[in-house]
Image (cartoon, rainbow, N blue to C red; front, side, top):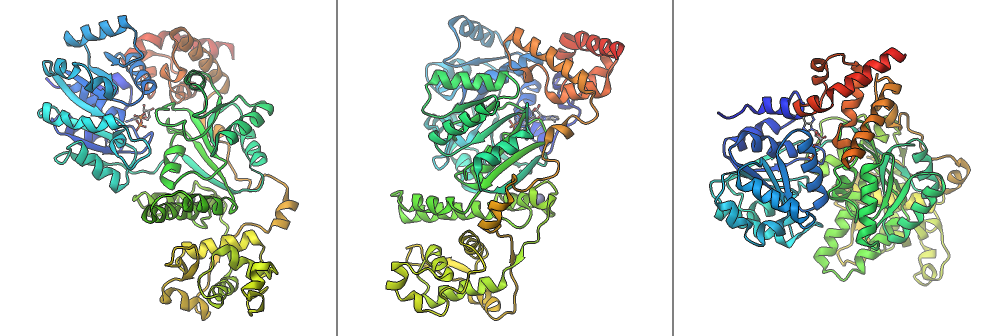
Length: 612
Ligand code: ADP
Ligand code: ZN
């Protein structure tokens, strides 16, 4: 008889209900269907194949690209009493032999393998003779040659469809853009599979963006409200990573650098610290990312613009996987933009690729300089539009209607027109500010009526305004591709020029005021997630529980979150259960954990109650 998925969810994983499309996916796969699952990071992809693995006959084979990820998954499943093992290059001979034996004897519910391992050697042959529950292909976007995580071995996974036509295959990814999606379908031969798309919203993540003035000082001010929390700080280059890590360490933060220039051993050690200790901050380039499934990362900070809005979403998605409040924080200054533009222009890519890259950058800037709900912009871009503002981004929390810049926008448009619609923003700003530079004079632009008519804004503000005019379609890149600007569609531009339309945008404060202002920029209410994350939990009991968890984790050489999630400990400290039955109601405590740890936890709760 097939076990009931909801029962398995409850008894093994300790959760009451499926989330979003999980129930539909599980039913589909348990019934023998193949599936493509698109779900944000932290959305709950693992259960989509783990539960069918337990409901169906035979072993489920899970293809996963990273050893750390496999180890975590296997350890978590074993904690939940599930028979799981991994085959990868990091296993010692003895462990391998016992995994083979268990596999042969049908004593494994889930087998995790790297793609190399699955396709090399004779594993496929061996599997062909065994009952198989399903194949799960995790991080399926690795099959996409366009993406940043391309893994050539993934291309060969297509043979699973031919060799095992009767075994359901489920591909999972957090990358949802249509091109990647269709590439996964065709390369993994999933044309017949059901497609399941979860909402990409991560409501527990608070998005905050500050105007970049002094990134170092602003970061320290932000981190002062995050003391004791684990987080990731992304910077663009190795050099910046080293600098920021040193600054944070000097300020007493437990910060470690991570980038591709470190030796594999150093990187492994950094990752290990991050996973096993609490409150470690990793300062990293994008080399640090995929495969970090630590659930209690409380913040992700960007001191430089990320590569794209997709990348930003992936990176910030590493915060708050446990569903508790988390923060995605970024500083952004217009000064970075020209550098990035030049970088694209000098990249040697063909013109189509350059146009795509510029478009990506525009989207990113549109987000960073938004004057309306950031989450709406983000989700709209990801193809999952929201019907209302989110209430949990800096703009929603601190509405700032922006200023009326209609007059300034008209001056900007005149400057474009009078100079022949072929100059870029930098030059146009020079004209508006009345620069007397050599170039301006040699072009005769100091004799134009628009020369020097824009002194009410400073350079940074003008640049921001030009970006907004581009983002809103008043200005376009001139067709010659030399970075000049020309007018957008007439029906867009004319009403503004004629005074029939108004324009409001948020501009950065003038440089003069910024220097005077001093403070750490926008002080956003409630930017400390820790204060709300623990709700009504007794803080002393929670601390006692965390200490106990650390001890358990050390004994088993596991990261603490594999013993219990914060979420479970918080619920215990809130409810103070007095019986195993009450304890079993706490989310994340299935039967295995209940019988293994239940007595000790109840004991702690009781002793704490007696002491206070
Ligand atoms: P993903 O692989 O999509 O990033 P995970 O599978 O790691 O996400 O799940 C993220 C977190 O959500 C995990 O801590 C998991 O235990 C939890 N989770 C998943 N599904 C449920 C559910 N139905 N109820 C409660 N928690 C869940
Ligand atoms: Zn919002």
